[in-house]
Length: 419
Image (cartoon, rainbow, N blue to C red):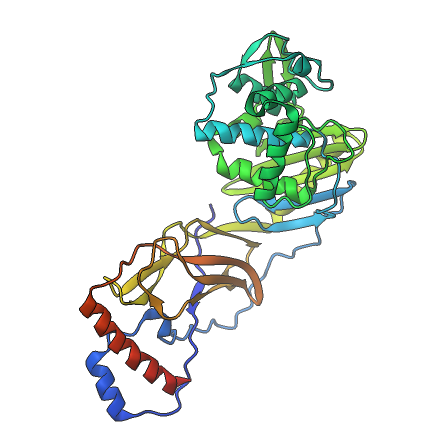
């Protein structure tokens, strides 16, 4: 990861001084606790010297010989380049990304084991297109079938797993669509687990990038499978159809696809240092073209952008006053690592603004949303995150609540003078 650069932080504040009542402030000083963090005016930010620094000149994204494409950062989710990213297109064997994702999900939940033996039906064996070459009556381990789906794009392996997990390809497609909706894949509908052509079977470049991001981030222990260059089953050795694995050592996934209707498609991912990009290219006219166009996208992203980890999961970004609780202050932060993808040489322009909810009252549970954080690059908003309570604050005792009510009364009263 590039060295962490924490953006300068501002906490929202809305008071402006008009007048002052000395007697009231005397009463206030007798009962008031220290001013809560979000009510304090932020310290003035030091003004940088007017020394213009040279910046990397960023050209327009490349134009590709493809129907649709997108380049997304796997950490931040930022889209760096795109063209027709939401167009509904036949995904061909890119469909198997969802098939594999659901197998990985079941493995991760412990519902199935890598060593479970899956019976091979005649329907699975007869499925046309690319094959793992399983035979009717075979009992094949889940781990072998998953390799067959990912590495050699086995339609037979995909049908066998669909039957094992859901009892058939149709109910499995229903599960696929439910998870597509859960992941925010708004332009996707699956009819089968293989990607064989059907008029109502479609997806989009953006949706496939979102799915790939979940494969990488949700189940990382399975992801190494996507970079394997060969797979052997039944004495038959087959290469991974993603030839970009041989050309670029930073590439470690994900999946190819082809049908006459879809053209040649490729979802690829590459990691350089700690920056990972996902490229989706759909509708090129040859296997070579899908590789070349994917390389253009990845090279552009790595050359002109960088991804910074600004804050760690669980880091305390602010403390805020809580009323009526067994403690006076609440630790506030984020529940996931915060990444931002920015043009190279502009990270000094990053600023973060915290907007924390006023009048926080116990009880508060860890994980409750208590505000928002907005990250800007200059004048551009490049990210927003919910701010969460990092701890529980239980309701205080009777006298603690009473004292806080008095404190709160004077706080609100004095606040009215600073509108």
